[in-house]
Length: 359
Ligand code: NAD
Image (tube, rainbow, N blue to C red; front, side, top):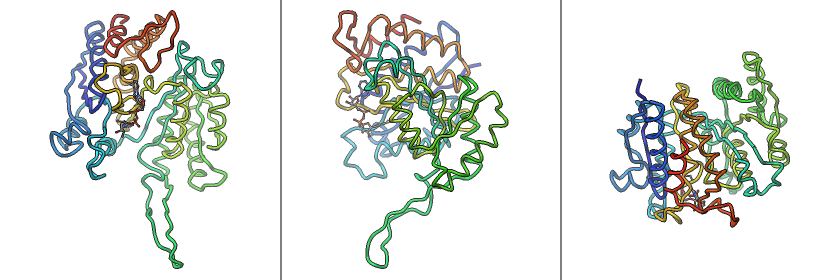
């Protein structure tokens, strides 16, 4: 049965890195008869230029009918002076909300070949393989009431509300347990239950649903301790699940443990398993058009897509193994290059071609 993939290359280096991911999909299609067909759409600045808006309703409709979406990146200086409501980044928020992508998966994987790129000691991070599951459509970023009001004494006061319903906690919790079942079966739930009522409820729901996943070991950590543990001994974690605000901060912190933003994929899923896959980095306008962007984060986003939305884990394994072999051979784009005898600097297309050759 064929699978429909929507490609949204976006702006800046987006088209360059998505082109390399396409080569990888074409190779897998040919070698493993995956039957992946793709259509292409516009998002971000390129959509503003063509249609006056960062994402059209027609593109959302195509996305809803697809089996998965692969996104490059959006944004750039050309559109930075536009009104906030029609900036490229609004296209991202619109597609996340339109598809109800409530679960954001941010792996932090450090290939042993790149352990020197981390700011932590090599032995603390080599072979790091951690998955952060962040709730993406609730919590303090969306909670009402919110705003800035003027108090009786004339002073202004800003306020936001951290709010989670039991059903919102349960769906992200179940999602995280299921992911832990496919990995090392250890889940760490992160909140601030010693101070926040919303976190107390979060912990209670996690405890309740844990009974349905008796093969997964659940532990709880307060977010301040979790942040400390992440930079002290990150390899102790397998899967972490947390709310929107805490996940935003912890996932960026975990990303930096790996030292290279050009290597990190991500996924955002809804309850039907429809997912949008994208590199963690942005459109990198400073290097766009130079042919030096690292396409591996996007290629590894394809790997996640095969695993989590298309149930093609053999093909996903083939990608991770091919990327490992390319790194073993010493091939590096500029962002992960180090001046050593065994290391060769390659361009965006050369890196994509090398992965295809290994496949
Ligand atoms: P960025 O991630 O685009 O770039 C940060 C730095 O990392 C730059 O020096 C860039 O050259 C480098 N870099 C990023 N990806 C790389 C890759 N694949 N290979 C090699 N080097 C890479 O972040 P920024 O500069 O803060 O933002 C640039 C634009 O991207 C802005 O318009 C921002 O709004 C947008 N943005 C989009 C997304 C997204 O589409 N999901 C995410 C973040 C930022």
